[in-house]
Length: 570
Ligand code: GLY
View 1: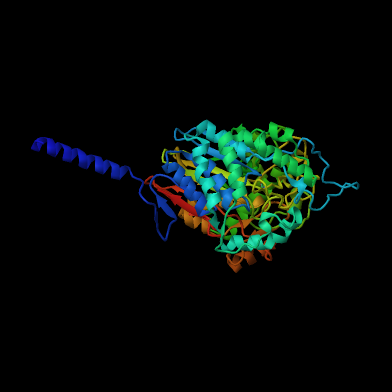
View 2: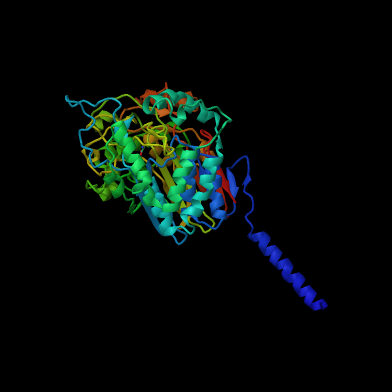
């Protein structure tokens, strides 16, 4: 070999080596001030295994939609509390060319459902019927949703995407302390609903490796035959047979006819932010849109984070927005929703005209009602940004913890109790204490109103944040506060997620604060102004999983320490 040839090859070799090195995913780094920082891509979810599988799919050449399918199914394996095949959800996405979209895979009322199905002969709600057991489940949408999104925008085959999830279900995952506590608390209920031999009747300890062979087998069939396996194949038949056996009403026709729906997201501005969130049948987008518009004239930053004025402005906007939510919103395929009017600037300014800093508005001045507060923190959220710049914000749920508690042992998953998100009787609260109206009454094939608020935020025309959380009715207020924490109060993503949160939802006329996290002077000032504060039995408010695009283009994860949540990235 000539010298010249040799040096050319050496140079070429070094250049290739350099290129290969610089193209290689760099491991993400963790700093104490901030969450995980990654250069190119990130997944933040309720379980490390699920975030890792999402990232593995991206590294295999998949994009955000492939990672969505993998993460969602990995949550069904490792986080059966809310991760699911037997539930539903919503995803809002922004492609790297700036185009926006969303998919609704919310459950539907079975075709045999009717408006008064949870009422007795006196017209009173039959306790527990919409929350536990055979009659509580809607027709599940998750498999339809993840397949529709992946088929349209993903790059890998479903079999490639599901392979590591199937392996995870076979190999097992390590049960956390949080999980072991929840399994133990509900063990008797699982037995009561499903019989003594049901899988989750076993004693499950923290640190134990839990496999789910039945779920692995279900996922294998779905990987092989596609989404129709779930809705028209053996899996559909097993679901329907199971419901028939336990006295439910989900039929083969319900399963066969289920389709996810593409929806135009709700898009609005807050100062120089463009916020993109979920449209009905989720109330999330419209309600946060109303809250942001109502608070926009106020100097939140000047008041200071968690100052009495800041809390008041937010609470008063929330009061008014939830009153509208509960009255006007429902499934857009069944009811006309005045979206434009509800988000109209003049309308919303006018709504806040009755607010004064001197004293609390009373919710009964806006509408009647007095009810007890229900504590819940189910559902799960994950956020994804891929190496191509596509972003997806996904919230998915069984509704309550482990849904209806109906567990189909043959299939390895729980079924939802989403029917409780309908208003069983106008004026009566559901399990989140939310009072419903006619717009959200039950009808065959109708989708129940949701609070899930998967959200994306743009700043200066570029992706800025991916955010969402579980938490039932508190989802909406947690998403608003997380965005404000970063935008108005300059917190890092991780700080914004960790910051204590408060919540108000019109009725009951209470403001709840995360326990032991707020200044007692703040509470005294608010009480003196007439706010009723929920001091005992406060719920943990949400479990936010978010991603912030930093000014240098890197990604910062915010994984909520209130759970076992974790970010992965490269
Ligand atoms: N099931 C909780 C929600 O959709 O809001």
